[in-house]
Amino acid sequence: MKIICSTNMPLVKEAFSTIGEATILEGRTITASDLKNADIFATRSTTKVNEALLAGSTVKFVGTATIGIDHMDTEYMENNNIKWCYSPGCNANSVSEYLVAGLLHLANKHKFTLEGKTIGVIGVGNVGKLVVKKAEALGMRVLQNDPPRERAENSSQFVPLETIIAESDIITVHVPLTKNGIDATYHLVNKEFFNKTKPGLIFIDAARGPIVDTPALISAIDTGAVSYCIMDTWEGEPDLVQELLDKVDIGTPHIAGHSYEGKVYGTIMVFEQACKFFGIESDWDPEPYMPAPIVPNISIDGSGLQDEEVLHKIVSQVYDITQDDANLRKISKIKGDNRKAHFDKLRKSYPMRREFRFTTVTAKNISDKLRNKILTLGFKIKNH
Image (tube, rainbow, N blue to C red; front, side, top):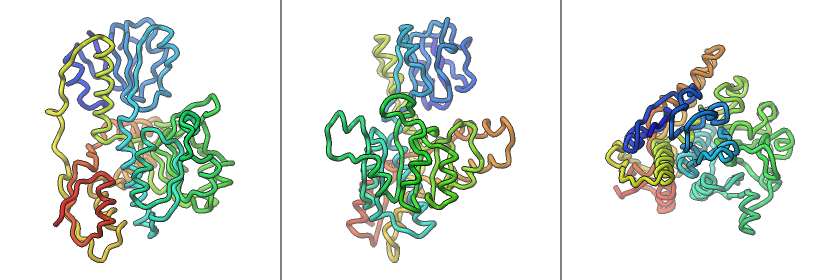
């Protein structure tokens, strides 16, 4: 089989070369001619998968190693007998750890405490569930909003969006991008939204950029309705509005889900679905290709430190979110299409980030409560 794979999919060549001839191409520049004689197309969100790309090709299977499918014309594929799949949950833990790193950074920088604050989680799917778990571990009151799940499960754990808006000190969105239907999310966060929030809101978008009306967010920051903002996804990316980047506290180039594990799991999910579709039994094992942890061990002494100071010291050693922010801000000195190229390059050449569970914390002079927080965030821990 002939297989075309997009860049930025770790181990994609190692996996797909076991079942065919795998060619790796830059995702945003893949054309219809590249796919003309292909059987399988494995991609990420930088490629628009539509009729213009697939018409006239021999592609029978398209898989995206992402949790979102707004870059895919699934209706066209279904109408033309092209099997497609995506990778729900592959990078959910990565995104939840991104949030932990971002919130601990804000709390440490601006000298406030997360414990006791109310966080509203809009969208409680694969990502949102883990965000809820980690927010609870940090001692926050968590409000959950997910209308599709609420209807399906008839559960009392969910609250209306109006309650999230009115009561939350922090709001984070984890919904797919949809423009139609009762649960449409395009510009869900808009001027009316910010007019009703508590003053001094902390706002986070690590889902999809167009969920947020950019001018409305800029205005909310200017008026103080939003005191601190973390943005990983941007309306119009790989282009972005410089004014918004200038105003947010943390700005990153759509990499919240870019832990090494998050990307590898996406590759594995697409590979396994392709094998299933073509009736191929594969015993390919990714484990021999997995690198050693970058930060296998951390020692920490909690003497004289608040719990969240200790957590910040631990988390920032494994994932320094401020470096991603600094790298994106270099875009301010770049003009024209080179800005888009810079954004894409940061994603394509993103340095390896391992998840918390690959680090063991050796701690002394910490409480049992803090020990449990460290464990629930995903770290291993041992006594000093």
